[in-house]
Length: 483
Image (cartoon, rainbow, N blue to C red; front, side, top):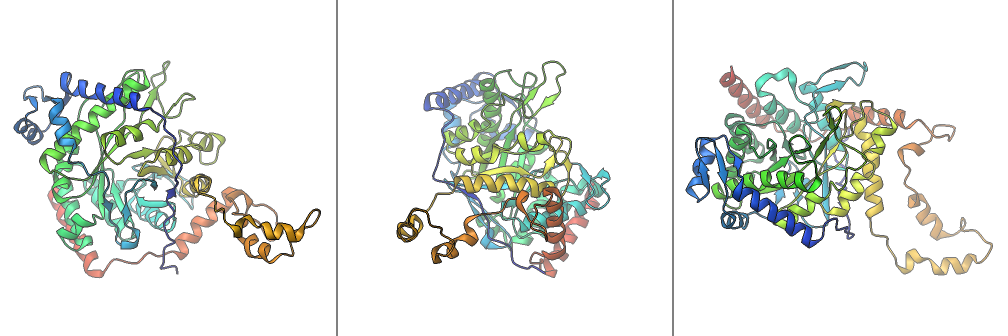
């Protein structure tokens, strides 16, 4: 059984592509400030309204709409940390967010699973969360784990059961996307404290974070605000994620949709900084499009444009960015569409410099899990990682002396230099795996075989029994409260 994880393989690159120039970034930020000051954002949570009013925001308590003087916004944003640590159970897997490194996660919060053994589609369960945590724990492309699907067999406390399943099957950082509401957040912090050891260690190396979605256009989610304030007080990172849809919940222009999204993210960030200055926060905007004939959601139109612009907007504010990649609209596992829609994503998001990125492994617009899909998406990720690596140019790799020794018309097979480097000169792709007769195998068959191998052979370091007991106690207490 494997008890050691391969080292993480984030995308690291000295290369950068600038999708927006400074004038465009300034224009977007100015539009956001204007919307915050003149239009406002709805905050349907009394505690949030009180905090904002106490610090000088213009609060209409009846409509729950808050308008933000730009001086207040700028002052609050000064306390947002540009980088911070996302801790892990195993400290060697801590993520130090920094320029030039992009850590990816799987996609999350799906609700359907195509059973790996039977092939039947069914509702997702806690066991699926645990299975994907173990697979993601093994893959060096996955820097941290989102519960890939929801634990629908666990009722109202499913977000806490998802944390339990993850910490029992992975040593990596876990980021919830469902732990919303004050009670669930408080229990989540308690669980993180048990895993981390104490409150001080959780603040220093938080093993948990949370993604919180706003409601376009220009509304915050009450339960999301409750969770954000609880986690910020504990020093646990949150990502504020806006998902505007062009033509329905946002203007039908890319720039207008980005302004909507930015106003939602920045207004929530200001609240958290006023309540807990210095609280770690990530910025994220993930746009969708409305089909002009049916109004159906479209994730990857031909003119999807720059999903990397929000990364630059985050950095322009001085915040770390949570970028978007993968998440194909393909309903099936292994189609031209499932690769074509997302093939450029990991390369370009790496060039944009996003600190953290979602998300490998789901199909049908982030809803359906085929366990082997993460192996297919991992292939696209690794192609991007290798493409962005810096090539080593040295006397050894230039091999001029070897070239001179072989000369015109010769061959290099007999050279020691060739024997040294040939073994690693080609990294076999998923489509280049050989069978016993040295013929290329079906990539899907290889992907399924790898899932089977991981589940049979990889076992992360288990939690201490005392920690498992405490997590179970917390789950039982949360269940009684909900019941």
